Length: 223
Image 1 (cartoon, rainbow, N blue to C red):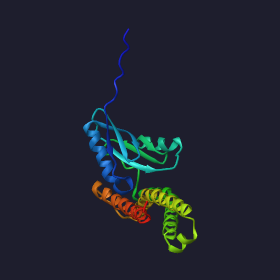
Image 2 (image 1 turned 120 degrees about the horizontal axis):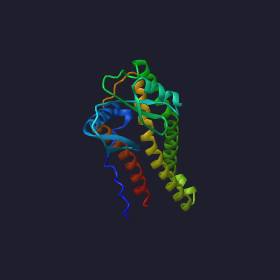
Image 3 (image 1 turned 90 degrees about the horizontal axis):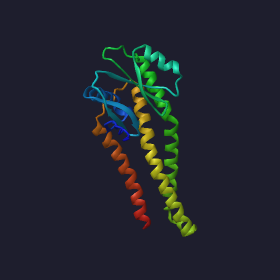
Image 4 (image 1 turned 180 degrees about the horizontal axis):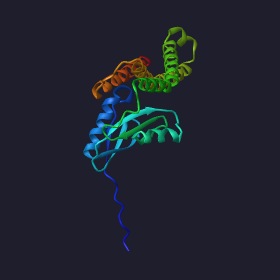
C-alpha cells in the first residue's frame, strides 16, 4: 500500500533590515507579506523565513524581555496581541488585528529600547576591548625593534593570531556596537528611519574598513 506523500509547505526567505535600525520598516514588510499570504515562521540570523498561508490583515509589534515568564505572554494575549515567535529568548514578536490598542505607550517604548540597549552593552564593550587590543598587537608587531628582538617564526604566529582576532572582533563589533548605538539613540527619543540600502551601506563600509586593514597588514608582511 502506497504511503501518502507528505506535502511540504511553500516557504521563502527574506533578508531583514535590522531591527535596531529599521524596526518600523521590517514590521511594515511583515504587514504587507501577511496581506499577500505569507506568514513569518522563523528568524534565522539576518534571514526571515516565511510560509505560504491564507492572507490576513494584521499589525505587528516587538518587545525585548529576557526569558519572560508565561504570565507575560498571557497579559499580551489578553490585550489582543498573539505571540508569533521569539528570537534567542529575548526578542518577542506579536501580531494583532488592525485597530488593537498598542501594548506600548511612549514611556514603555523608551523602556523597551533601554532594555534592548542593555542586552547589547556587554557584548559591545568586550568586542571593542578585544578589537582595540588586537589592533595594538598588530601595530606593535610591525615595529622594527620588535621584529629585531623576536624570533621570526614567533612573530609570524603573533601576526596571524592578531589579524585573526582583528577580523573576528571587528565583525562582532559591527554586530554589537552599531545595534547598541542605534538602541541608545531610540531610547533618547531619536527616530531612526533607515532603508535597507542605508543599512547595507553602513555595514559594507565597516566591513570594507576591516578588510582593508587586514589586507594591508597581510600585504605588508609579504604573506
